Amino acid sequence: MHEKELIVERYLDIITRMKKLILNTLLVFAVTSLVLSCAKDDREINLLQQETSIESYVKTFSDKRVEVYNKVWRVVLEEGAESAEAQKGDSVFFDYAAYIFNSGKGFLFSTNKRSIAESAEMTQDVSLFKKWRVRLGSGELIAGLEEGLAGVKRGERCYVIFSSRKGFGPVQIGLVPKLSPLIYEVWITDVKKN
Image (cartoon, helix red, strand yellow):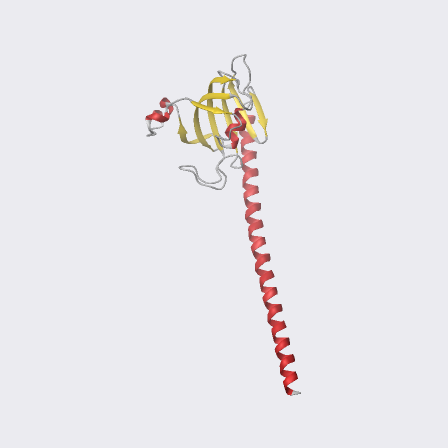
């Protein structure tokens, strides 16, 4: 009888340990899920704050045409020629100055315009001072800039503004901190229908 009691006692001990292990595993899973959920919620709050700030800034351009598509804002500072609008598959040639958005143009982190680079005392490889050409829809650009160029015309000058959702996201790229909203000043030099 004593041997049976030992077996039962061991069995109950094993069951108790398994219950503790399962409960601890569930607890770790719950805490991890909560932490990840909070981090995701914090990122979403940050994105909403960025987009609200962009909307407020764009409202200051009441005398300009503003296009909004999928949380990408384009403020047309100078209208382009009466020519075809750039669409997916078309080639767009342009100059740009890229800034971190801070209720307007903040820190300049890239440009292909020599005059802007020199006035900002940026040292760049001179080979970067050339017109950019991109085929819309090719995925060559970050999503916000590519989406913002849809509909531009030759001769147009505009701001393309977007949150980090459409920018570099949670990754630091060069001088651009992670989760940075961006504003590009863009000069469209040509649009080629393809």
